[in-house]
Length: 286
Picture 1 (cartoon, rainbow, N blue to C red):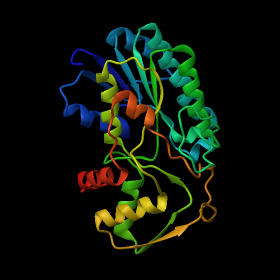
Picture 2: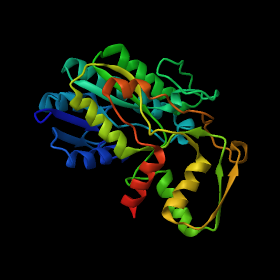
Picture 3: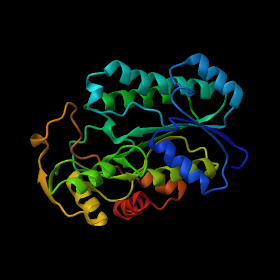
Picture 4: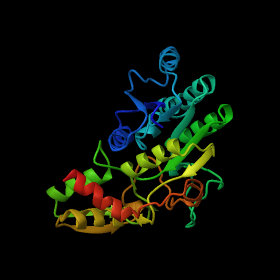
């Protein structure tokens, strides 16, 4: 992998920073981490110059509109970034013969049945964010064979803003907290996901297509919060509440636990249990 040139769009976001951390621990390829100005996925002229200059072998797209509730008020902007931007990258990858690794989400599913979600299950998103991410997936598949779409869920890390860091802050400020108990999924440590992305690059395989990746196991947001407080030693009382008691602009899937069999068997991966990775993250933060 040492000769490969890899462009990372959204390189200063949460997953981009996780990738930057993981690449430091490996004797890896030549990575170019692009911010949203230099790596503007909506600016065709910039993209054209960038691809001509860098001639990447791989492109990793971490750039996305991820503000789920705000997306309900900004559907056009959300679609531009998550769908049109993804399509732009796919077209340039096709032209320059690069492989695209694109990050998607469990929110492409309705998530109304308590069964593990497979890559082949029908996607039926229930919010603007999920719809635009699914559109992006379809645009990529339409114009580029050499692609990996990695759907992930409940992403957190020691970088940027996320649920774990919010809970740690609230744990130091409050004596009690109410957290939703009837939405079930799997937390994903961004550093674990970043390592898997590099594993895909290293594998030399051309097993293109859509894959599910999160940490192993499942929990509710309430379980997740309780674990954060237990591991960090925060002393506060956490109360379970139903989704109906905490209305949000965007609807969320009630069960979005993904089946990871395909990625495990194709790339011979062992996936860490969510709580074990949470311990690592909290230690990194502290």
